[in-house]
Length: 144
Image (cartoon, rainbow, N blue to C red; front, side, top):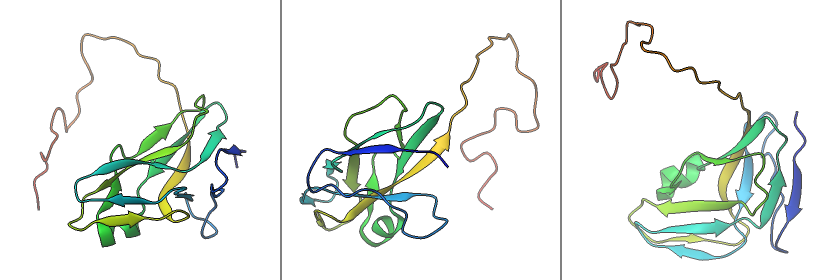
């Protein structure tokens, strides 16, 4: 378990919490009311800032219920919060649905998951090892 320090930046901010024991993500809540028209995006305020330990990141992800029922998603999903960032967590929310959607103060808007990060050491080479897949991508395995 990692320790996350959290600071409320707005009076209306809600401290994230796990909805159920064993959940991967904590819920994030809006501190403002917004009307999101179809095709529009908005930066939703959560009113919180966090301190993530070195070697970890937080990923902000859509809520599956909002995505299925209303077409509400996150533009840069998953959104990465690096361990050195100390600003407000904002959710770049988009309405992919066909109707206006009202985001209300105090309602869940996204979820946040914490992950351990490994740094990569890059080595330039002239050739890569061969694999059965090779350069196949973008639907190369077919649809059936």
